[in-house]
Length: 113
Length: 115
Image (cartoon, rainbow over all chains, first blue to last red; front, side):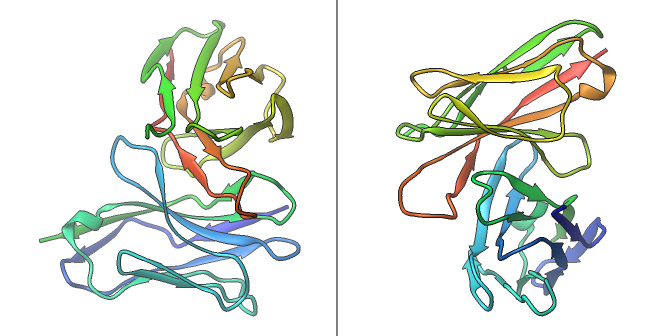
């Protein structure tokens, strides 16, 4: 079945540091890939998405590139801020599966001033 | 416009009891999905409803059921609660216009604690 594997957390960085959160997936066909962010006490917010190989999703300084050859969708940001502290989830949506998202286990990010 | 709303925010139940969670989608959205998020884990898909019909079901026991009403709001019901049902229950709605992948908008969730 479909699965998403994220790097283990928690991740602690200083403000303005470079961020990478690794994500790899297993799925048949050509899934769409997503990064969601969850702030404390809140639901999930879509951060960015990519729908086909070599697509780059970007939003709020975050970027991720859909790499079909390595089945990866790593999240990066060049300079993190304290306000980026949250839990980040990688997810996939298999084509034809309507609305069934498969999520990774999440990576807790803490950014220190 | 209001986002996805869920009620109640928090709920405490005893083992063996029944619970009903409610979700109102974004206006115009006809699809509602339910997810269970156990502490420290990613959300797990439970159900998807579209136009009042079940369109997808995750690997959850028959104690879990749901329905969607004519106004597209939805209820998730869990019978015979177990301690392991303690989780954050998330509802997500999505549009059916604009083509796939249909972005899902999540509500703030209902925190269920089973004692």
